[in-house]
Image 1 (spheres, helix red, strand yellow):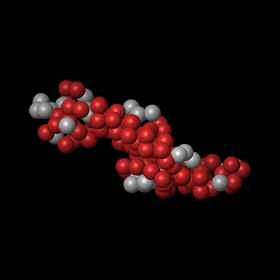
Image 2: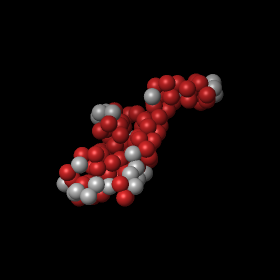
Image 3: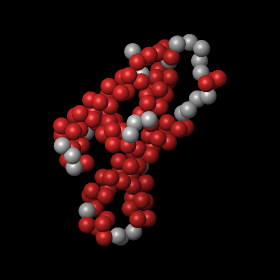
Image 4: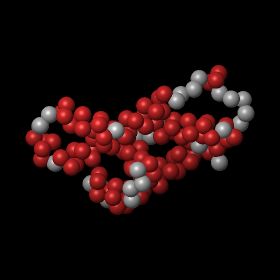
Length: 126
């Protein structure tokens, strides 16, 4: 993934906006690359309805992972980004807030609402 980030930076060239704040640009590019990976994994793991197993979904952890990937792909970009940074990258709310230039409270509220939304969409697996 780091190769992707540096390739994007290279292709972007040496524009003034990149040179003014390289760290911010690299962070943003890394987040976007991570989201691209998540989306591509979700797209490649779709299963036709006719291929689904007959047994209940909660017995197959692969089904739960697929359902979670579909639910994550349906999130709006900012909540998906914050959720990925918090739970996939392991960053704290404070780190995310500083990285994205928003308040720590806003991060916490977004994490809470996103978890509620995912819990609702994955209710059959609880």
